[in-house]
Length: 139
Image (cartoon, one colour):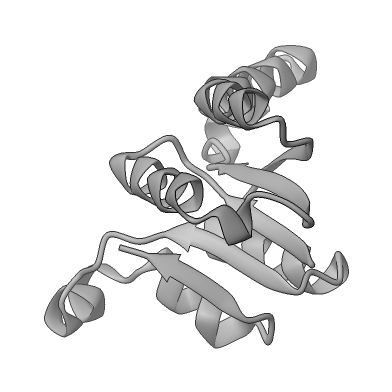
């Protein structure tokens, strides 16, 4: 199975990784791609920065998020592809899952109430609404 594991370095990512570690069926026999999406800087701010500096910032942010995930995967003996992208988080996840032909999206979620989701929105909700790839949401 080709699995897109979405991480953001939050407590919710840690819960998802803990779930992943506790279920042996998710640890082997799959092709993992670990994705983090770095929010793009506002266009006016990005316009005044050197392109190399901006790209370095995005790469550094992705690497910070990947560091604990790499450690976990190394301990488990799991190989994965790491992918860092920039843009609107839900859109990038959905597009990556569709274009990459993934069989499953695995991600953590805040677990907002219905009212909280209505007011604040939810990346997981937007991914589910805009993508046909099945998702495993860990709360």
